[in-house]
Length: 379
Ligand SMILES: [Zn+2]
Image (spheres, rainbow, N blue to C red):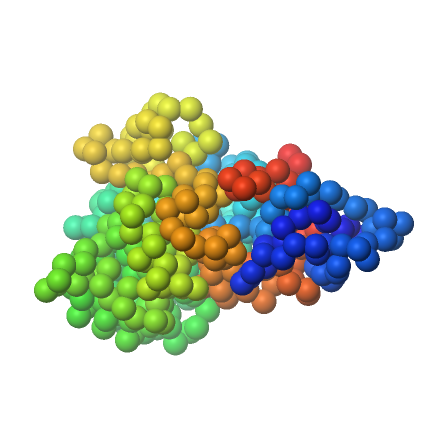
């Protein structure tokens, strides 16, 4: 049994001092530091740093040159190991709008890796299927040639591996698709890459939309007489919102307002593509050339093409640009996304009985150690 002491313990709603967390595969107990018996436990000294829940990234395409859409098992493992060093302990490999047979291959690959018993890094929760049911007019970096009308049957057929998917509710077939998947009840429905009006977005929510794909990006914006998808997503309490907090996709000055409105429904994501963790240069996304310069990834025509954000940096950016507490900022990248995809009983916070997905990080959210199911992850 392991025991982390000398830490600032980040729980869901507060940060505690003078406590120690005892865990094996699961979190066993939280005790007073003075009661730690070094003969009973393998004691880990956190040197006064934060001990926080492992982060949960529900929207990430690639990392370290690999991309979930490639359908490579080794690629998924490279990503899983790489993002674990950024504090991510669970994730949803995210597929793009690509050829249907390539999407199916990516699903099968995720099924295979998820079923492996040998640890490979951050745990795959399931797929985030971002395409192909999007609106061509808000395609962003999704290649238009593979866009298809919304198909609820396809999602339901793959509900064993798909945790969430993106749909533009205003597209022909959108209503039927959303109603079907909502009734099935297994997959989270996210509106995104959508040109819906405020009314159309609200209709989508009525049919079963409960999540929003990277709020503000690739959707109708909030205008005072035409409040768009952004207005609908921010107004409805049932709907959670993803935010790419890299300070480039959305002005950092808005983070505070979005958190005020969404609170526990705000989910930080990275939307990272294969250039994440790599030097500046030329890469691809959905088969299209992308140039990475610093924190920006752009298609040749200047369209934003994903990010190179690491989720711990997202927490840092949120924390530094708001007046949120550490617990609130961390929750946006742990318990909130875990809850959105229905995994909060097992992961997402440091709580007795949950899996021991734990990170040790400094004041700047630089990750020093990552524990997955109680084991420190080292490549
Ligand atoms: Zn994406």
